[in-house]
Image (tube, rainbow, N blue to C red):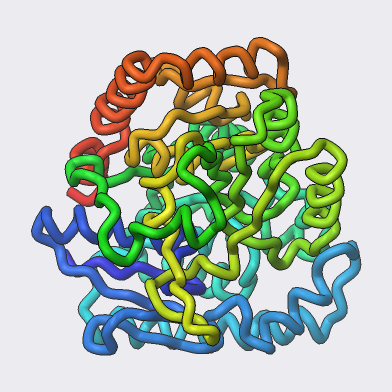
Length: 411
């Protein structure tokens, strides 16, 4: 079949873009052809259509978003603008389907998280009017985000996020989302967890990445504790600081790969003050981390996150909430021991598979600290642990597992 992926953005290293590439890879292996419709794209023009108005950061959509969240009353002009943009995007969708002879659409989070209301409405109306088969890939539902709880568009959320249509199949990345979708919308779905290409061996340090520790100012004796996330409150980074403080060993250095983002810098400032008070050496290396290897303005190397993982001695993942846990899978892929907080999706979906992590349940205990010390003193046990995790992840979250799930969905 000719399969058309639809979203606001297919570019960069955000979770939706990365997971979509994995789906596309598997579907192409199964003999399908893949095409792309989005507002921001890094795909080739010959197999994609880029419509700027479909990007959530487009000025028209930002104007709409400013007027629908945090209020329960909607101005008639907002309704009018949503309708006009939706009609335009629906026309562009039709052009996309006709141009590439699309047999099946795959809305990627576009019918899930309401960051682009007109696009969600356009997809819903197009599917209802054409009866074209579709498979929606849901990552983050609006009811999982506090910022969407007060809004002026309950009618549109009910209509399109996601819609209930006979020609639309639904897939969710965790059991909790699956249960809530059934409860709130009355539709069944297929569980399709995020995956990783465990079939390929992880890359080893090369000439470019061999000096990562030196670039971050670490010595050979230092223990690199990697926090491979952005600095946002739900990542629970304060627990990583507390863990290192309780280890009472100056060799442990907390390296945070990414900076704060669109959620503000208050949390970052709190972490910096906490690390100072606790005597923890915390280093934010976002100025040396990029999506691609390159040189910065000072002529210094910029490393990718994958350049850093091989040098890590321990990975902390103390998240309070995650839709799944991509960074957790990366840590398993690079065969690193992990300290993980028991967030709900981990407890329900990942832990029962038999993975061996150092766990904390909402806060760092003496037992957590002792478990880190014991694992560090026992290299053989550490090696056995990471190998076991790798084998389990390959079985449950590898490309082969994804292939088995997708085949009947698109048959």
